[in-house]
Length: 243
Length: 220
Image 1 (cartoon, one colour):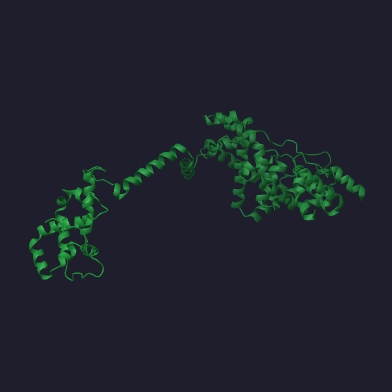
Image 2 (cartoon, each protein chain N blue to C red):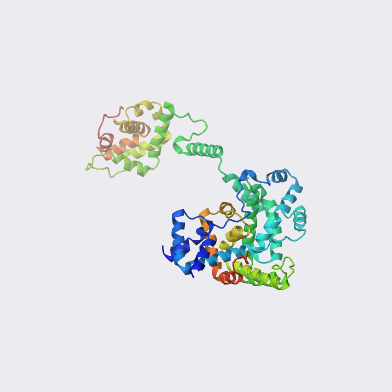
């Protein structure tokens, strides 16, 4: 065993904390090493000096002075201490409080999520009327920004087909939806059945039909100027909208 | 030479300290007084102060080196104890809680005043106020020598950093066990052992020569 290893173990050696095997090794080293044995002796002497320090008596009247200060209100907790204690109380781990807080958080998150939020007077979640209204609202959202709506209308066109340089009737058609959203929602099942087939195209067709009814003259004029546009939009696939 | 080594071997063995506090928490002798104090009995708190003032004062003198400063901080300790007593959860002995509050007060005081300034002032004060001569002895020469030794020990203690001095004082002077010191200082027990050993190693060059002068048996 090296000197450094022995010196590191002199503390636990003195306290009797070393395992027997290590203690035997240290003993063997101390038998042979005078410097380590001298260090052990100095450590023993140091500890003995510390433990020889006399008992100290506290000043007389200390308890009385403390009690007088307490009665004078000096031991009142400061605002800061009260604040810290308040936080400590809040932060102390209590399973029931944590469970209630977590439940409240989930509930609040659910209510604040747009898809789940309901206004007073609106139908309840899960009914067909609600679903139809939400579909109508989605169409309205599509219709409100006219530029987006126009671009969205060409998304139905096959790649490479000619786009109408003039404003599409979809713009005015969807604009008409703003004023007549209820007419779409009167027969919502049509838009909702078979969503994987082409319900949106049919909805679009239906929307065009409504738009045409609302702005017949305008549509006729534009259709005359740009023949084929309406057909190009009205259908890329799927059946034509009933008129 | 060989005889010296043999004598040294005979001296070896674990240092078993008398009065080491290792009682379990359930045996807390302060339990009843603490309960009465929490029930609003101020006389119970005064009894607690009287019961613990000696150990608080002793610890603070060894930590601060000055009796007058130790008394100030002892008063602050008990005021803090009264102020924060509701934080005592009873999962340790009340004396452990008292030691913790006193240790914090001592460390705060050390931070408040400059270390070097405090050391000079406290050393001068402890020598002037007779800290090292608490009891008159029959032999004045021996008493003077003893006072000198105690002053040198206190001076060596003050040379340690508070982080090393505090566990050393709690262990070697106050007689607490490792586990209780760990609870007082909120450290791991292994850290406490390591600090105590480092503190002794740091003191050895300062006090080793003095211990040799004193000879075996005289220091104790």
